[in-house]
Image 1 (tube, rainbow, N blue to C red):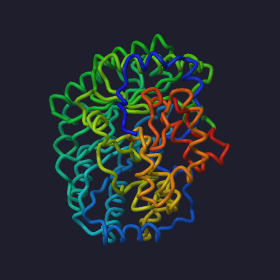
Image 2 (cartoon, rainbow, N blue to C red):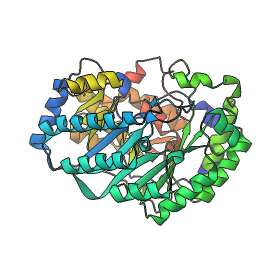
Image 3 (cartoon, rainbow, N blue to C red):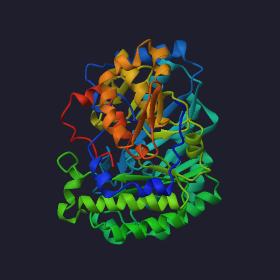
Image 4 (cartoon, rainbow, N blue to C red):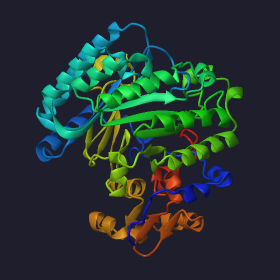
Length: 470
């Protein structure tokens, strides 16, 4: 089996009937990792994490690193938000948090040593631009003092458009960021009021124009469908504005209303939410709109212009996936800094303390703030390789897995191959003696394909904690 093209055409979009979208609109993981973070255990200790760092220091110095920094603070509450955040007007809290980030980096350097190369950096939140210009510069200077930033790397920051102007964007460029991600969600005023996030479209257009003048490598815009007060008609207006804005990348997420898990969502009235059929209509319209506007459908909920490195990586079969989603950077270890941040080193995953009190207390005791994680088993590693091949390349050669892990693929995954046959009948995958190929239609539902190889999910009937895959 040879890799088939996964380039999405309008004829592929036309096949996405409401019935088909609804059939596969089931809860499932996003597979930014495998196993997924809900499988992490408290039995994974600080010592386990430190051992993974030491092993990397001994045997992996030539491999690049990725760094994620979580900055949890926000000026105001967005009702849809499911992120780990702290809403506060006390900006002096940023200075204290910055000092603890510095101390957490010191704890890592004690095990890693200085001078390791990073090829990817991402500031997420919360709202990283809650930090003022001086604090952001100090944080970047501290990271550059301890790590080597590779030329051509991806250095990105999530930006709340309400907190920046062109001068601030110029500062971000000056201190080393080359990619921006603007949280837009929806341009409709009624929707913005319903989710407590009012930001005029003109403001976003001005900021994207400024980012282009400042020569940022890429600008991403986040959208959400399924928000309160949204209708297919109102969302169509937002889609039109987005295609006029022409960002390099678009992330289109489905809103998952889980008020029992996320307290801010209790401010949203369920009667204001669009019906399931309307959400399907919005998704179908968005895909058609973006593809017709020239965007490449990267996978799941991501689109990029053909010239964007993400689209180029997809064409060349170089897509990768990490905790920030699809990436052009090679598969590498991820150092996670800040409250609740999740990282990966070697064959381990780990997560920091979820509250500031716990996070600060651990660091005050000179201890890394790891509270849970996972050491991957051999079966985990095999399944991770399969799932990531399907999620990133859209095809899998049995032989590549057999040679890497010394297994007979069709024997090891006999049950999973049987489960794939109904998807084959739906035209989602092609199976033959040499491998699995996701079709251009199946690429829209690639999470459903990957889920069949998730051993934990197949034995767990409580999937409602995940968002819908469509």
